[in-house]
Image (tube, rainbow, N blue to C red; front, side):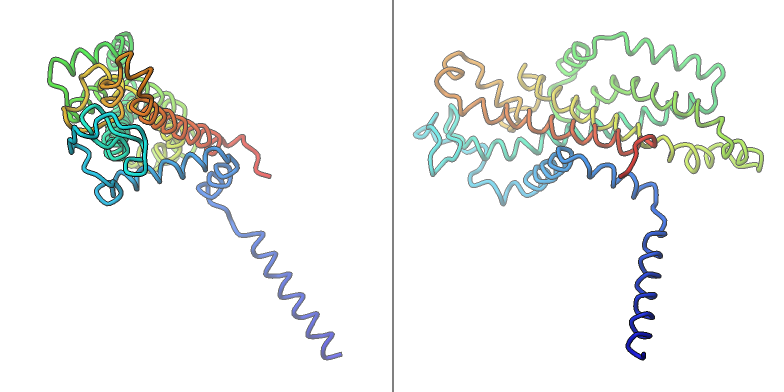
Length: 307
C-alpha cells in the first residue's frame, strides 16, 4: 500500500511537471526559432556564415602564408601539399588570399547592409508614422532614387571618389536605402492604425516611444529578411567592382580582385585554381545568406503553422 501510494504520488508529480512544461509560454522569439530550425538548408547556411566569420576574424592564425608574400620561383604552381590551392601569378598562396579576402567581402556585405538598414528604417519609419507633406516629399525622393541604375551609379561614383572599402560601403548605403525605406513605410502605415498603437497614443505616449516600443518591434521581421538580401547584394557588388578594378586597392586580397587578375583566357583554360576557389566562395556565401533569408521570412510569418 505504501509503495502504491508512493508510485501514485510520484506519477502525479511527474504528470504535474509534464503539464507545467506543456503550459510554459513560448515567446515570439521562441516561435520564430522553432520555425527557423525546420529549414535544414538555412541551418547549414548559418553554420557556413559563422564559420566564414570565424575564419575571417582569425585569418592571421588560420592562414599558412602571408597573403601578399611574393615568391616568383613558385608562381602559378598547381595545388600541392605546400600550397593546397596553388599559387597565383606572383607566387602568392591562393588559400591564404581567399581567407584574407573573406574579411573584405564579409565586411563590405554586413557593413553596407547595416548602413542601409539604419538609414532606410529611420526614413521609412518617419514617413510611415507622420505622413503628410513630408511623407509625400520623401516618397517622391525615394521613387527618384529607385529610377537610377544602381550598379552603374555605384560604379561611376566609386571611380570618381577613389576605389576603397570605405567608399564602396558609403556609395552602396547611399543608393540602396529606398527599397528598405518603402518596405518600412508600408509596415508603419499598417501598424500605426492598430488598437494598441491608438491606445498608447490616447494615453499620451510620445511618438518616439510609440515608434520604438510598439511599432518597430512588430516590423523587425520583414526588415531582417530584407537585410539578408542586402548582404548578398553588397557582396556581389563588391565582387563586381573588384572584378572591374574599382574595388579594394592592391595588394589587398578580395574574392572579386582575385577574379579580376584571373580573367585572361590562358588562366581560365589552364589555371583553374586561380578562379574557381574565389568564385565558389562568392557562390557559397550568397547561397548561404539567401537560405537564411528565406528561413527568416517563414520564421516571422505568423501564418506559418508549427507542428
